[in-house]
Length: 228
Length: 63
Image 1 (cartoon, each protein chain N blue to C red):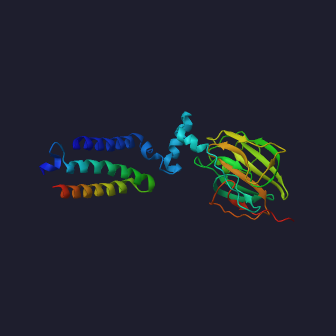
Image 2 (image 1 turned 135 degrees about the vertical axis):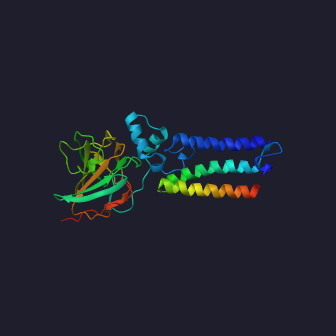
Image 3 (image 1 turned 120 degrees about the vertical axis):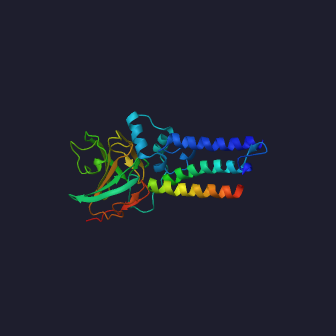
């Protein structure tokens, strides 16, 4: 009896070690569920899946997750996407707040303000790997494939640009011209990691800085612009 | 020392402890490698030293 228990215990440990070795450098299924997303599905593994076109079901479930978000009180502008703010440069009276999404971020975009959609335009013809962030100001040819959702507000127009990458080849816009949108309402989705640019008036006071992490529909990124 | 490997029709508790400890130590090393950014050589050295100490203690306890 004792021998049987000993053998069972040693076999269980051996199986765990074997699984660990087979899956290495990726995590064994025994520990995967307890790891944070970045550790659970390393980037190298996701890029491998992108090549093969086959994804682990658990990763897709995580990727397509669309949790409810509660907008903070007030009328500040909200982040349109989950991700890292990579720049907030101003050009020609418009401030471009660039948010970089990763494979592990929630990919549903939300309206930063309440208003009316005045246009949903498609631009670009290139699929780029991360460089989309550097091409954020371009709207014409040779720029990455993108959709620009313009929203009219009381303080002037605001736009959200959903930019793809080599990995993300599909953008879904869930609103159309003429639709009313609420602050924090879902407006679209980019499939797999890419970039979202929020275009806001230069006079709007920014509440976030480059390098900060933001959450769609929850993080206030700017105060409404001061009326001239 | 005889009781270390085999005793009364089952594995000696000493060798059983060494086996279980070694397996769990490998799993722990894998977890450490995933959670901390460490140089693989440094981790391997630390885990090897830990394993030697662990096995040494088991040997002391069961002999």
